[in-house]
Image (cartoon, rainbow, N blue to C red; front, side):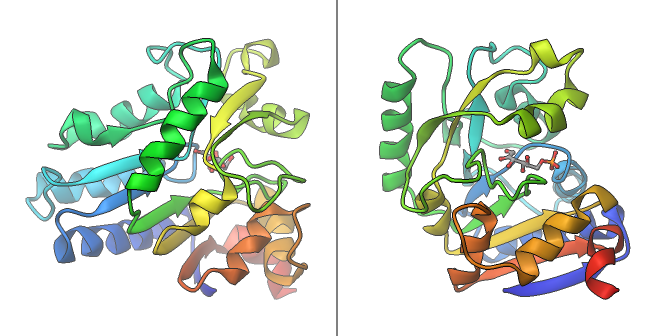
Length: 242
Ligand code: F6R
């Protein structure tokens, strides 16, 4: 696991965008694994800037997102479908057919997981972007999720719903379930880049870097992946330095 410590969110976003921009320059038909949440917003902004400067082209790029909330329409501003279009896809020349997110719009969530999982088996993700939940979750694989699980329906923990409340009007609006890639799907990516920013993730960083590999802290599995870069800002790294 390669650790890069940067000054702040801005620098973290610039470093991560640079990795993705280089990936697209070296392989214009890359398959990207993408994440939502607060951590990647700055990265997407910088990738859009690079697109506007003519540095990257998305016409041959394919994307697969990690997860989607159940029970909210894709038109809801907090759906991950909406988030991805708002932050990235609407601003670059990606072909909509090349964009993939788990669909949680119907009623048969298990079937929708199986369909998404089949798509993932056909794909080969060159580089996967990840955030991390304060409880160590990756995608929506909450503590206790078996490492060998593939795409599945998950009941979100109270901690995750509280953490994500900031994006909604109230806790009651935060969905209770989501569809998520499993840890096995994430580990199949050729390369993984994780972003960690802010003092509220300082204990999470400590656990990730010094704790054991355990299903109780899902991100710990990344120690077993051969090509992981974790970009951490000083606030999130603060407890490691003491
Ligand atoms: C988002 C996702 C989540 C987030 C994590 C951190 O697609 O899968 O695992 O990466 O909850 O969220 P932020 O970046 O908002 O702290």
